[in-house]
Length: 193
Image 1 (cartoon, rainbow, N blue to C red):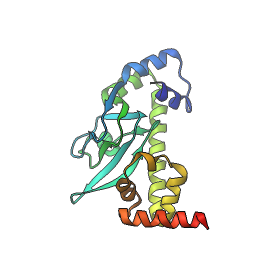
Image 2: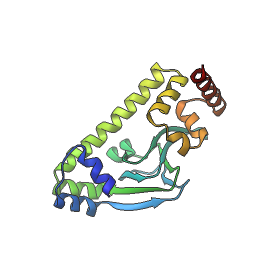
Image 3: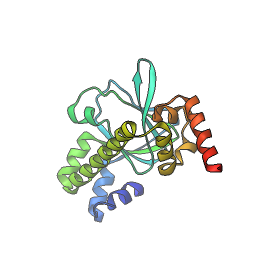
Image 4: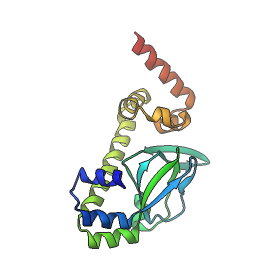
């Protein structure tokens, strides 16, 4: 819970009573590596906060998994369209490592928002952060080469290369594992020269 509170404090101050309400609303749950946390076809009624571990967002595309994003410590996760409109989700979330999440049900969020008006600000900030992340991701696929996307990931989230299987990173970058190996070799050769 400390990680969640500290994350929220970056945006808004909470007093002891407000922290107690937040703690009361959240359910702590751990997931073993390779466990599906949420799967497509279900209607999402939860928001997750990652306190430890790594979660992969992926889509099934004609039997092939396409990795779209990785969530690590300090990030909120939500199948937004499903959660908002009560429709079946098209995304899947999988624990890539042993992962600990704090889970907020839709009912607990509504109750928490009634008791803690600041929750509206917290929800807005979490939503805005998610939107900005997706906008940057879409823009990178439109404006950058696979090698540039690789370098961006290396510069911003280098630890993922130690935490996440390479085939998932390749999928995230929109390339095959073989192409990722060639990109890595090119980057290493450029750094040596």
